[in-house]
Length: 250
Image (cartoon, rainbow, N blue to C red):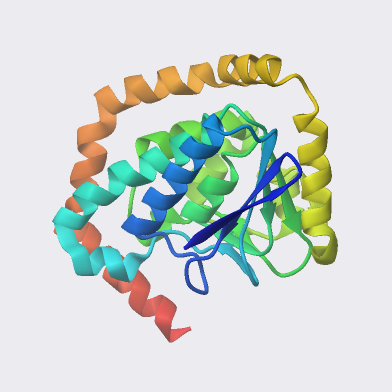
């Protein structure tokens, strides 16, 4: 499902859950737990990457439809916990996007301190509204925190996916690198950030991301019930079924 290796003081988190790293309940729980462990570990930095041509294709929609409302009730809190655990990890986190990072895959990529993407045909974006689901609370606030103000609403409400070049312009990623140098370049960034005093980095990162944590608390209070209701609604599941059917035809 995932694998953690060490290269000197750097932890390499490899996502290895099927061909697309589709996010089901077990996977998001495993990734969330891994970031909690790495936060408490003695590693200096974390590099997160996928396999093949896909970093992550996002939520496993067929599994969600199969599980129904009860599955959604378990899945959404686990999804929030995963991306919050990654986003608030006090260590430097570098996302090395080996290919497509779609929907939940994009959200996970954007939790990182730096996001590198391999040059090529991979795409990145958050088409949640095209699928028919609203953004989970933590996802919205993480993206608000990470994206430039002038591109935030366009990216979140437009539902587009972007080439690496377009993603760089929109502020979704920090750098494009040759695919065969992706891990090497990500490790170099990890070594650089990991060389900073750990306590100083941790305090500064926590301080920098505190507004997002506070915004999440307010948003959960104001919008949490509504978001959960829409995710559990039969009309939403019907929209997801239509999206999955159209996608399978392509």
